[in-house]
Image (cartoon, rainbow, N blue to C red; front, side, top):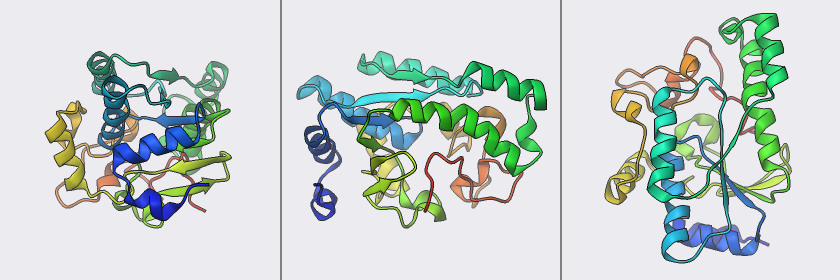
Length: 233
């Protein structure tokens, strides 16, 4: 059993080691190659090189609609750490049916259509990636959005039937940037162009000064700015 108070006291490295040892062969980390995820990737792969391998599988979801800069960062990350990152793609038939029936950009037409696209391109591949896992590590931070303010460092995800470990949940944006700079962690070139939260190319724009970091995601709709990967009960 994981004690949350103990987990809260651990550093990032200590927490990852603890979880990996508590659930051997059953811990996975999902990276979208955002800055938070790069911080965790660095911690996992750094330890793999210097202190013995961490038993944590790293994976990513390729929706087929990502920025070229994101693909470039994927290659840079693999080259830097020389560690495997497993890629999960959406079901080809479901994507074909969606595009045939509704076109390439149906997500602009309604929230329901956007959630349908996210479901096909993200949610279904995620469930395949999480199959057999007991712990899912994420790069969620509480200040990213109002929906994430109440999330805990360790919580049960009933929708995916796994424990979710959010080691950066209390980190500030400034703390994260300092960590990236100090450790020379590779990140997306789009961050220097006003893109803070980066998803699929047609669903992400740069934000204006003073806008919320999630304002650039699905900017055309009024919603909770979530794709459904991290359901809030």
